[in-house]
Image (cartoon, rainbow, N blue to C red; front, side):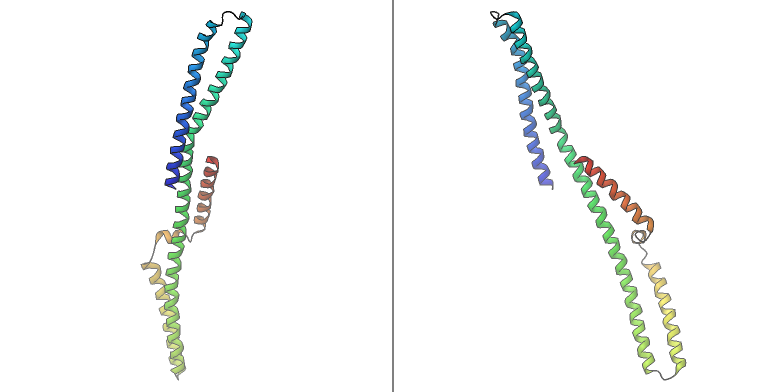
Length: 189
């Protein structure tokens, strides 16, 4: 992207220099025309004046068009750079959101794996256990251990950014920010 931006800048600078050269030529022609008009004294005054006015108006139109093209060429790199920055900002925000979702899923995966291991142990315990009292004790221990694991996961691996992605307001705020970036990008296009 930076290489394309540099190529565009170089191309625009070349076009800008060309437009400035054309504008300078037009100014020289404009200054030279009054001198030529003095040399055409043998033409009637009305015809000479009309011809000079027509040439002057034509030169002024060309000068105005060249100046307009020049200002557009000067503004184009700034617009392209702003658009590139906004696109990069949007891409970065989307990447951050995905990274936070990945963190959450990894945390949830670890908690679920611990719960599954405990359940497996409980099943084995039930199968080998002959007394119902023992099964009840193991079941109570399992519930207690699961509660401890959930509390431990909530306290030890608390990541504010990952927690923020859980909130409903986060989704709303993220959508508003992405819409604002999209509108700015479309204005620059």
